[in-house]
Amino acid sequence: MPPIVFFVLILLVIFVVALVSSGIKIVHQAETMIVEKFGRFDRKLESGINIIIPIYEQARKIKWREVKTDIQGRNYYLYRLTDRIDLRESVYDFPKQRVITADNAGIEINALLYFQVVDPIRATYEIANLPEAIEKLTQTTLRNVIGEMELDQTLVSRDTINDKLREILDEATNKWGVKVNRVELQDIMPPRDIQEAMEKQMRAERDRRAAILVAEGEKKSAILRAEGQAEARIKVADAEREAIKLVTEAVKETGSNPANYLIAVKYIETLKEMVSGKDNKVVYIPIEATGVLSSIGGIKDLLTKAN
Image (cartoon, rainbow, N blue to C red):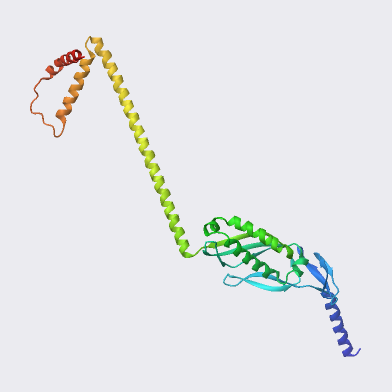
């Protein structure tokens, strides 16, 4: 066999092998491929080994977006053409964008979008660039939703915004064969001056609550002290009443008048306080102690006559 013929046969065999191998398509689980015949849709391939006729049949390619990370740990987006359509749930992390609230406050906000291709045929033929369309639609919808809310409402209504975004996006992307499962707002950053005002307001609120707690504590402490003093006075009064009762019974047993005895005791206690004070000086006592005690009966008689 001439060398030139042998060389041609080798090339022919390589071409046939390459042609046949290009017609074998292995589709992974949760993936699919769109096959066209001369540019027209024919069928979609299921997971497993599939055979297509090269040149006569071709796999349709679509644009897809992937997130990559550079050596500095920053994420960047890579758009590429692929003939495989991923049917799993995908997540798009959108960069921060500036939006204006209903009360004209500019805030920076970014979101996560979780979606899934449920109809690969519509995802291929109803939209030219599915990832970019989803991104732009999410950004415009986010501006519209935030623009209808005031700043304070925006900061405390994250779940409401998420649900509203998901509902609007799911309805809009249904034509593209996409199901939006959920939307999550990551960060809501108001302007610096508003942040400072909010921090001051928060500190003032904490100070107010602290003052209220201190005042309530002092009030309860004062109430407890007053209740304690009242209970102490009641106990002292009860003790004095019990003492007077016992003294009265004891004096009655001796045949004396209890009133005279009690007045005399009180008089002596008062006289003791008069002479025991730091600035009190008694120069002369005009009566004797025995005279005081003997005059008690006269005092009682005067009081009796006055009545």
